[in-house]
Image 1 (cartoon, helix red, strand yellow):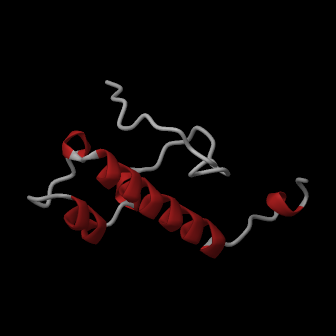
Image 2 (image 1 turned 90 degrees about the vertical axis):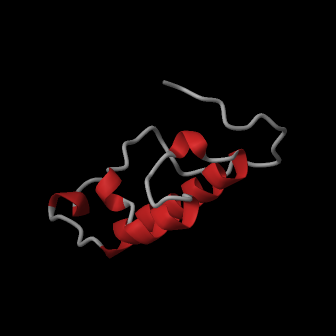
Image 3 (image 1 turned 30 degrees about the vertical axis):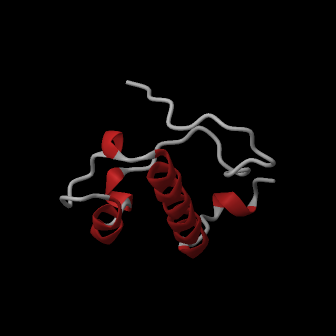
Length: 80
């Protein structure tokens, strides 16, 4: 199921470094879920457009933070 959450003119991309990817739900902490839900359950179809965008911004920050904290594999040093 795909839902259009917002349609408006933008000056720049909200997530310029994002590509199609999957973020595992276990990467989303309970505190974040409680912040954006009324009943503590993850129900993104109930989010308003601004809630959905704020949630995605927060997930993006967390993913970026997690990526910066992960040690690089030996193979990654040889890829350019």
